Amino acid sequence: MAKKRPQSKGNRPQQSARAADGSIPVVGARESCPCGSGRRYKACHGRAAAQAVTELVQRPFEGLPAEGDWVALRELVPAATVELTLKDGLPEGVPSVTLATVLPMAWPALRREDGSVLLGLQNDTSSGDLSRDLADILRRALETEPGSPVPARRAPADGARLQDLLDASAPFEPAVHSGFEFWVPDSDSSTPEVTASLERANEAAIPTARLSGVDAAYWCETPEKNHLRWVMPHDEERLLDALARLHAAGESALGEGTRLVGSFRAHGLTVPVWDLPSEMSAADVEKPAAAFAERLTKALAVSAPLNADERRARSGLTNRQVTLS
Image (cartoon, rainbow, N blue to C red; front, side, top):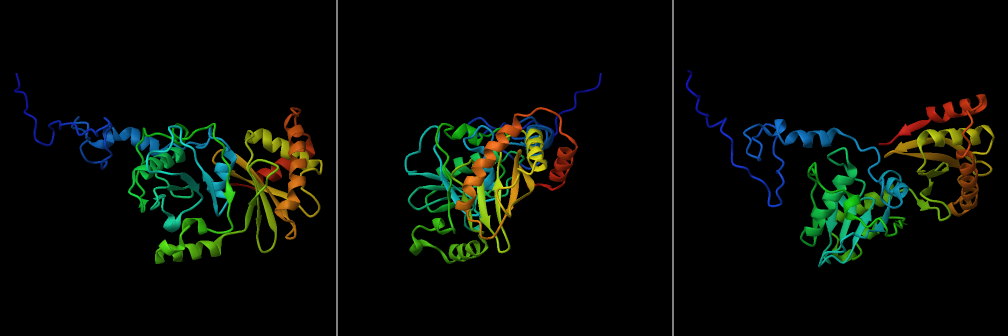
């Protein structure tokens, strides 16, 4: 009978190196797994982490209040803030938590000197689940020393999501700003780097306003024409059918000189876009948008097959659809 081969040092299972909360720390793919199995991380607990990184969550903000506004602030709005409410309340020493479209130097989050937290929404994330990545940043921001930014990192594959941390019953009311002065409420405390970043951001910001009469609709001003970009929660296929019916019937515009030109696809939702005359302000588009919402509701309720004109209109809308994320 062959003798049993003794384990070499490289094959011997290592002692488990679990974190204090029992989780397995993230290490390099070719390193030994901290669980003590003796296998490489990529062949052990790293499998779940790798899968989480590659799997895309199509609607990361689903289940949060005002999902359309979350999408708009992530993809369309230059400067805006929203006060967030945590399920478990604010920790001691944290007077407030504020979501911001973007922060100076593209920081993921910032713990201000007074202990308040700013969470940046328009940041590169490390996995396919934006909600989990943002939740990881938020949890670390709550524990960061005041006066410090929060660095980027790879979020744990089994970490909490925003839906786990935020109070879904609390209002979500974006405040759109003309610039990024909310970064530095006390200008005397601003560093030269933050000041330079602020100046660059303000120069690039497109004037934007949120409509008050309909949900998740944002007017913006550009040099040649203005636009309305409206994030809608409806099923994409049903929405495109309804828009095609209205377009074929000559009812898709928002007034004289306006035109439905296509749509974006962002985080699982569809965002129809209208061209507006340069003289048409956000206030001017309020009533036409409310009237369009009524026409759209009726069109969404129609279940009959599209006729030839409506199919052509739908094809045109589909060809002018751009995926943002």
